[in-house]
Length: 394
Ligand SMILES: C[S@@+](CC[C@H](N)C(=O)[O-])C[C@H]1O[C@@H](n2cnc3c(N)ncnc32)[C@H](O)[C@@H]1O
Image 1: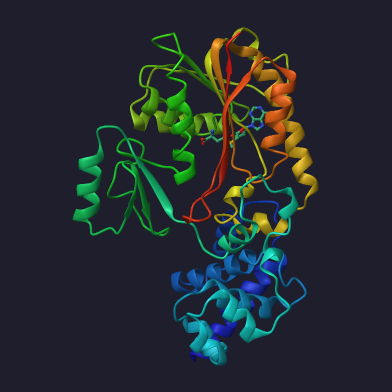
Image 2: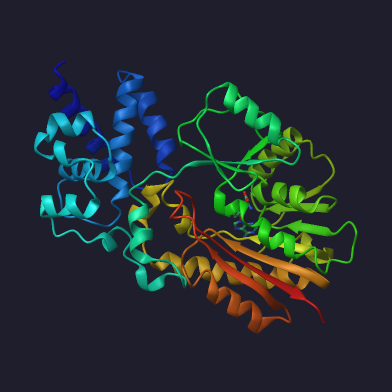
């Protein structure tokens, strides 16, 4: 097939997929099912079509009035910073400008395009977030971040070097790799390294602070929205000897956690299933020295990884999550021991899910705020998160 014809067929297929997909399941899963049903696409075809679709969603809420195929090509042009064969073939008039700055590209195209329209909820942002830089960051796929586990540094680095894997070091234990890097055959994931975003790794800064006043030599730590245990693993590696309890409302995710902990060599912990909006759940007698509360949230700080969520998001969901977070927090904070800590975490950029929940906690408990911080990641091809650490010292 002539190149032009082939590339046009990629754009048409991407447009068909985009028109059929409604955002109700992760786009990655949707694509897998689509390609399983349409076996004629080889791996190169799948790669191109997938990339075109993701570029389309990266534009967020900008230029929604364009025809889907036109918007795909615009998105591909704006998201590329190096020669791209599809642009060269289908939009040769843009070819020379592919390495230009975004501003220059926009001027060339003459679309009434505003960067802020990519992410149109600027008024809802937490303090200190640069709305333009954050909106722009969605055009770039984030990196793959690894956290080297204690004692594994030399081994992990020498394996990466031996396999000529490119990486950048962000501080001692954090490595940034190209997103598509395959590491599973090279490193023992969960034993030697953990796949964990840069900002998520920075939650260690809050955990370190809990060492100051924790009186128990083996503090009771409850990770109450544990999912597959990313923060729990970080707590074990940061705090050392802890008496760990994990819970989540989803049994399947706790099964994943168990597998992950087994690979990580963590055998002593308690686990249970609980919906924390329900006051009658198993938590009645659970008092803890440190509670990690990494609540369900909009995930708006991570949409660079899942741009379809940016595209399908509507602002009513912010209130939905803020209410859910307040309900969970209200039920959980009663379980902090005297001189104990409560660590509130989101991967949201919205004030209502971040600072406003902090204010709610302060108003409805005796907890005192030690530190709150937006963990900016959009300048490092990473997620943006929020953390707030409280203490109960009365
Ligand atoms: C942001 S994720 C936690 C991520 C995890 N801490 C980590 O580091 O990988 C939030 C988790 O809260 C759980 N969750 C949502 N609603 C809940 C509820 N009402 N009660 C308990 N857990 C809930 C979800 O199942 C999800 O796994």
